[in-house]
Length: 273
Figure 1 (cartoon, helix red, strand yellow):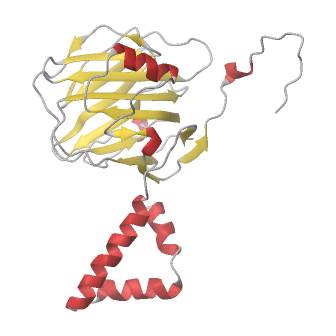
Figure 2 (cartoon, helix red, strand yellow):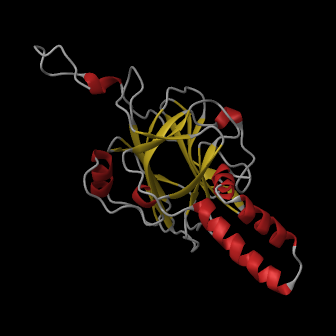
Figure 3 (cartoon, rainbow, N blue to C red):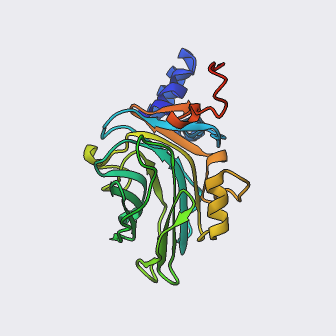
């Protein structure tokens, strides 16, 4: 059982658990109706209400093929355009998955994959393009804000790193993404909702994720990168996110990175926490 569901079930009293188990086994008409009501209540407890995750991160502490975060969206209409933005930090040099959206017919319906430092690979409808020579901060790993935009009508896709746009390339023009999306962080879906590969898992922290059903303008992407006001995602919204965590994943407060302790006042040699 998913940990979110398990904890919710365990929060019931012993008598409620026994009653729930009894109704699951019941074959009577009245029992079936009560069973349905209880199942709905339990599922609501599993999924929870949308949560404001501003100032928080999902932490993936180690290589794994079992740790992931499942994101829930009500969007089921075909997607003719997509923008995904998120902030991440990782010191991996091997291939890693930043965002995985699968549909019942396509495991790589919309995937943001980082093959190695400087090489990002967006996938749309099983097709992929390379964005190479991507400039990122050198030295110790720091937070990276990444966005990918794509429009079906033109087929144009573009990568944005820390508010700077790449060249614009064509990717699967005329294609639409159809079917109920399965969105996963931390793993790459090789089947709808599963079949994970440890060698492609994400290790690090992810925050500030939004997804839209349109291609954002450069101005909007710059605003998202800077953390200033922007219209939040209408498919996935970090400030109202519905999710479940499975495996070794933590929800934590965002903590400063190595460059956050720089002090412009050289005379002040004390840090107060």
